[in-house]
Length: 129
Ligand code: HEM
Image: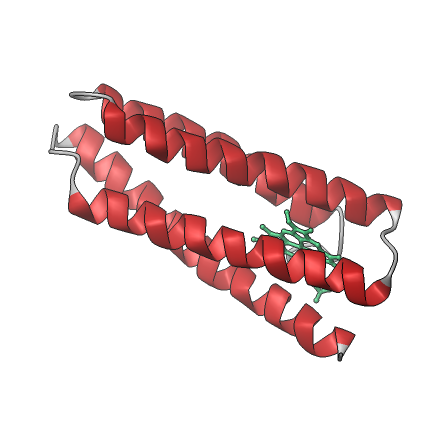
């Protein structure tokens, strides 16, 4: 299998994930500021974001399998990104179960933490350029 092809896919899907994360961020901030209702747009955006991060996990594992090796930087990349994905996924699940304004707060705080972890994780490989 072509390592460079799958790496390009993994690299490209990152921007879809960034797009979904930014949409989620904006929706949560607007909801918090306007004291809106946590609903379908929020859960749908998180489903898309969590799905894209899941695809990244699978593509990343595929790269390691094809390469039959993982450098120290790749291991750090994997661990930071995995932690970020888990924080975002559990945060969005908790937000669904919470009530009132804490739905937005829970989702927002965890999304921000997850995004920082993923930002650091991607910086461990070829970075954001
Ligand atoms: C947690 C699961 C993940 C695993 C196992 C994984 C694994 C990998 C591997 C093996 C590489 C190739 C490194 C190399 O050949 O130099 C890589 C590169 C990369 N990964 Fe991940 N990754 C994961 C998650 C993510 C996530 C969540 C993102 C961004 C949203 C991401 C973005 C990137 C980028 C931008 C590169 C560099 C691609 C390039 O050089 O063109 N990865 N990853």
